[in-house]
Image (cartoon, rainbow, N blue to C red; front, top):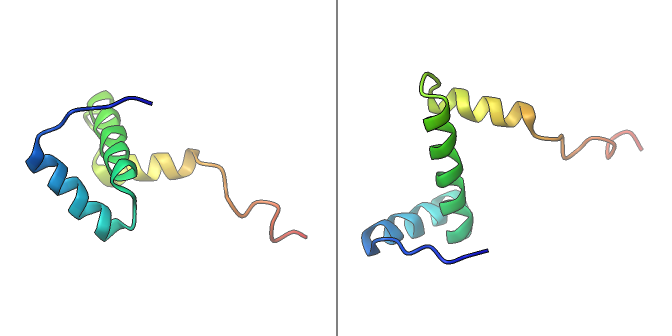
Length: 68
């Protein structure tokens, strides 16, 4: 973990977005950074396509829970 210095205006945008998305400020900033990195690495994909790709790659949190 480290400290990242950002502009006060951007910090306010992260704070506002985190409230809407029910994430901590750090989680919201991390989400935006991850999506930004993926967008730069995959410039032909839309935001929705990037989210779909990430959801498909994520483990199912309910796997095994409902089988019991």
